[in-house]
Length: 127
Image (tube, rainbow, N blue to C red; front, side, top):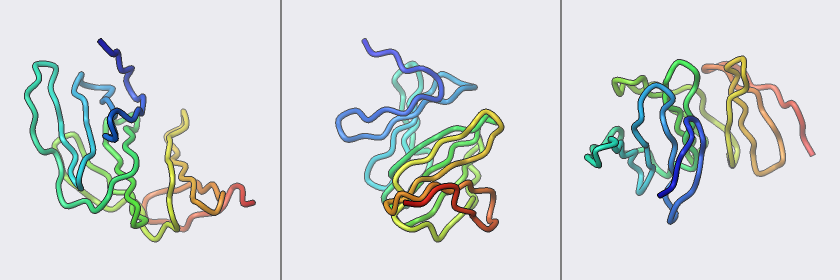
């Protein structure tokens, strides 16, 4: 049995998995969809037609953020409402939230960006 801690990102059998901090459901990204799995084992499609999700993360409010390889970060409320958090990223690789709720995204060019909803992004580090 594997234990997944809330907010932890892991890759299992090429599936991207994240857990919600407010519920015990597990979210998995596969083939352009985000699948929600309840502790009972029941599954449902939480979001679809997302392109190629590369990262999943939850913020402290329980919203799910999906980073796609086409340079978008989509935000989903717990009830499934979708909005574009930011777009136009260049080869995004990973994302994470800090304790203040700021989202950081790394890019293939070794640039770390602090991103806020649909606002300009400023590089924090670039190699």
